[in-house]
Length: 217
Image (cartoon, rainbow, N blue to C red):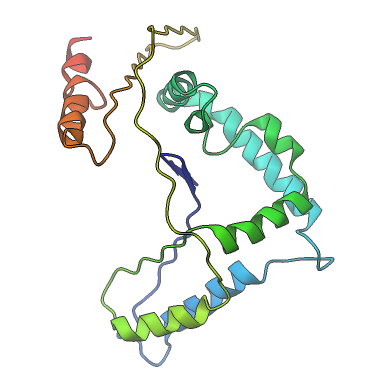
């Protein structure tokens, strides 16, 4: 799961030997068949929604993951920074959700969203490696022929508006090295002419061990 702007991105990755290396085995063809089975034929014990025991188990795993983020102080600081800057906005929501919302999810809710995901979300398929383009395309068309997609693209966030005042938040923890995170609403989007200049400025000011702030502080 990733968050890019106003979009939540669910991705699956597969890796296999190229068919041109072992043509008799046709591993990519088998991989497409496996992906099709996983995506379109999930385990439905009552033919209506996902297995409740499995869902509850995965909810527990997800909650434990969210709770463990605090152990990685850098990621926790980044998460809290975004939550504070975009409080009350879609982008401020952690990509894995919140414990409160996860606890309320039912097997029926999840299955309804699963069907919505397949029918309404934009779907991109990337293939990298040495392969026959037409052969790969035909296999993918066959594997994903059940998708009837209605999405016309990704949702784009509007340019940020500068806040009226600076918001300072401080949290304490028993650690040996403090974390300083600063966020700025620049009104510069990815298609702005100054976007790449902003990326360079961000790396000079912070965001890497080479930053001037990191070396001095």
